[in-house]
Image 1 (tube, rainbow, N blue to C red):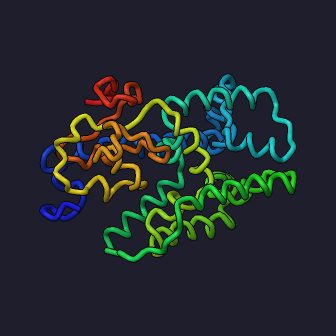
Image 2 (tube, one colour; image 1 turned 90 degrees about the horizontal axis):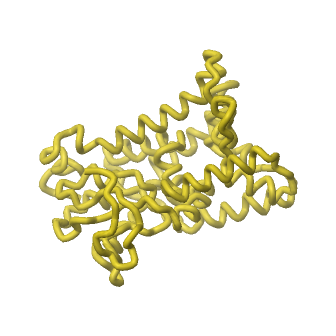
Image 3 (cartoon, rainbow, N blue to C red; image 1 turned 45 degrees about the vertical axis):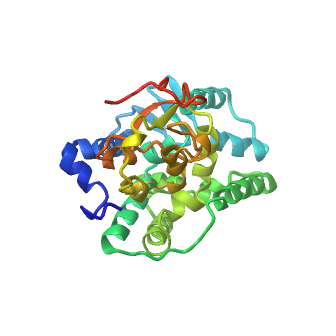
Length: 296
């Protein structure tokens, strides 16, 4: 962490100003809340822009969008998806292959708002200890959700998926959803930093497998300017993705290619040296300047 200014990002605020040092955070929050609102204005105000939820939706009675993870569970459970579900999956697969699979976690998932709050409070309180759970655990949980679907013939995971429970709760009353969401919040706050999203959530695990091949990435056009302040590492929800690109480990290009990068833009916001930017993976094999910038 930057010892000169204390909290991560303090030097970036001093150099770039508060707004520029929070640009991607503000855009992410607008995206998460805006998408959630689109699903709620129909049931709440009879303004049906989007019908459904994040698993399956129908926008303006024209555009079907289907969660690929949901469809996979349906297939494993022996269920036959309708034609619109396949069309919706095809659209979403193209989108996530372009935007980055785990961008879902940082730009769409409403539970991320809760876990980010827990980790913000954790930092402000100064909680340092943390349980140890291997990040690979989420892949085992992902496998278990598919095994249970196959054994029961049902999409069992969606009954306890915090995202699904939050949506149902906002429409029909929170009920048990309060307990599940509170457990996720308290786990991240008191037990483990980024515990749910970074170590346990099977949804993130699934989307990381798409993210491995996605086009949009975080690039490091000025990695030589890095002053080792560690601010990017301190705020990154998947800290293991930064070092290879930043330190050219194994000859890695100045591009974060690790599947679990969430494309959240936190590293861009907090870096006072403008080491990071959004770009594409074009030119990644050589690590030279064929990466297209998406922001200045």
